[in-house]
Length: 77
Image (cartoon, rainbow, N blue to C red):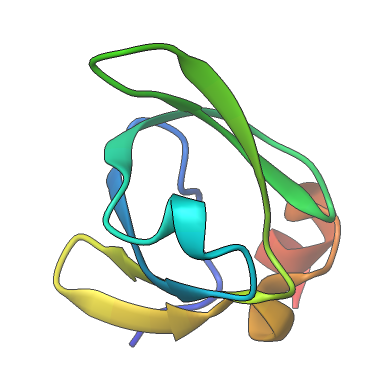
């Protein structure tokens, strides 16, 4: 699992979330902040909080709270 990388452009699927309406949603990541992903889904562009979610990004399963750093700082780690 590679946490020190850029996620924009990757496909994301929400595997679990405290907001159950997000579970199963998927799409292409179009923007990322310290606490959110902006995702282009077939229905709409949505913003997803990282912390309460577990994601599948590519072939990796990632807990959102493990990537709640600013993207540019995460790449420097």
